[in-house]
Structure formats: structure tokens, C-alpha cells
Length: 378
Image 1 (tube, rainbow, N blue to C red):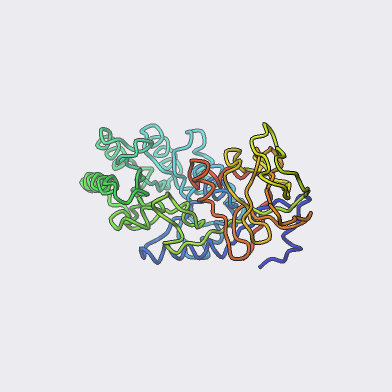
Image 2: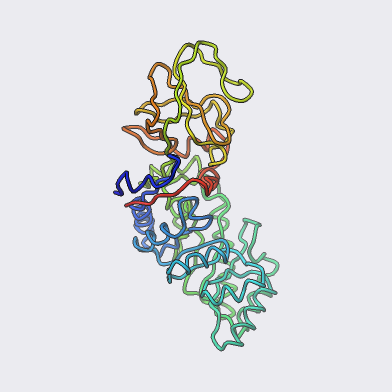
């Protein structure tokens, strides 16, 4: 593990620590679950964990592919020297196609104009462009709608400048184990594949499973998994607990006590005075706030770890500071404070924040802002 001296490179003690060993463990766990290829999703700066270090760790653990949302995200990985296959999960603007091709990124395709432009580009350069066709099987977001299957498949089958190497779809309710939707979507996908086969399209790869689909739905696993949130050790939803499936959280958000004071009973604190001390005790001010990604909605709702004890965040979370009620345990300037992650025998889980803010784990970690330095170890 990286030494404390190496970790504390910023002038402010607030930082994010990412355990790349946990990333490798989680990718290996997904490979073990299904025995298939894994495409590790590292979009949105690796779900807030740092795209380049996470991508390298995922590949070290045996991931065959990486996936991003934007051409720009793929370019970042290429500029870092990563030469593994990289899938762009949605069609970019047509103007981005030259950059996509130059960086050898693999496009997801579902619209006629985008497919036609790729076809022309591949034909002009004399080398077909490998593409992943995306079918809309019930997400109703992006993908080829059923009404357009015949036309788009015929366009792909007759194109001379593209080669369909994969078919994919996306699951809408995989994190709800009892919902019939995933099974229904797989039936739709099979119909799409059957129609494609009639036109001679028999892809090497078929992928549908996000993290929840990978963990819960055998029929959705196909020839490659496409986990995102799970490779970071976080739960896809309330009914799919990452820890139950042997996944390990990789991220810690840590800081230090910046100021400490003893207050009298009834002392109101922070903006709006929405909390007052129930009795005399200690308040710690921690230099981290909503500009760092601590949701203001967590005010008076979640705890941090200080000295191995759980202590409530009190008063309104501020832009740059958060107040913590330490009760009768005196805090001292410089004491470590863990907002997310483990300290001693306890752990503050991202899932706790998500539940308190009435959101999902994805939103919590992707909103941790760029001004918080990321330190990777393991």
C-alpha cells in the first residue's frame, strides 16, 4: 500500500483513495460468475474513481474490453497508452467519426445516417469498420427500435465498409430480481438475433448484462458481460447488495478535523440553524462540502467515522465545510475523518449515502468533483 507520505500530496487533507486491488478483485469476480469475457465500463472518469488507473487494473484482472460513453473518454485512454479494445456505448455526433476511427475506438451503431457515414469511411480506407449493433429491447432509450430492425439490419448486411462483430442491448430492470422485464428483453433480443442471422449477420460477441444482469440473470450473460458499478464494489440497487455477491468497495473519501469547539446545549449550527446541540458537547469542522460532492441533502442524515466511532453530520452541509457532532469525545485538529469507507472495524457505505439522499450509488460517486484529488494504491 502507498505510504501516508505519498498519499498526502495536496495542500488540503480532503482526498479520495482508490484501492486498485479491489478493482482487480471485482473484475475477477465477474469473470468467475459467468466464465465469459468482461467489458469493464470506465465512463464518467471510472465512475469517479479515475478512468485510466481503473482501466489498467481491470485489464490486469483479465477484462477483454473497456467501455466509455464519449469519444473524448476513449481518447483519454488511448493517450494514456492503453491499446485494449474500447467500445463507445452510444453514437457520438457524426463529426466525431474521424477521431473515433483514428483512435481505433469501436462504435455502437443504431441510426441509419451514422451507419451510412461509417460505411463510406470504411469503404474509402479499404478496411471495414468493426461495429456493435444495438437493439432496443425495452429500455426505449437508444438502440434500433423493432419497427426499424429490418431496414437497419439490411443496411448493415449490405454495407461494404462495416463489419458487424457484436450485437448488444441494455437492461432496464435487471436490479429488480422479481421483475419479468429482463426475461422479456432477452426474448426480444433472441428475435433480433434470429432476424440478423437470416441476413448472414452472426456476430462474434453478444452482450446485454450490466452489473445486476451479470450477477442475477443467467440468460442475460451471453458471450460477454458489461459491468459498470459492480467493478467498483458498489450495489446496482437496493435489491442487489454488492457485498452479498463478494464485491469489495474500492473508494474512500477521507479528510481531517480542521477546527474543534465545545458548545453549550441548544447551540444552533450552520446555515439556517436546522440543528441544535441536544446537550453540551464537541463539534468538529471538516474541510469538505458539496463542492466536493457531499450532497447537501445528507445534512443531519448520515454519519462519518472519527476515532472509529460513528458521528452525525449536523447542520447544513456547506460548499467547503461540514460539521460533525462528536458528543463527549473531544476531536483534535488533524484527526482523520472518513466520510466514505472503512476506519477501524466500521465502514460508511456509499449505499448509506444513496439511501439518505434518495438516489443511487452511481450518482454519489460520479458527483465527487475534480477538485478532490484521487490517490490510487494497490
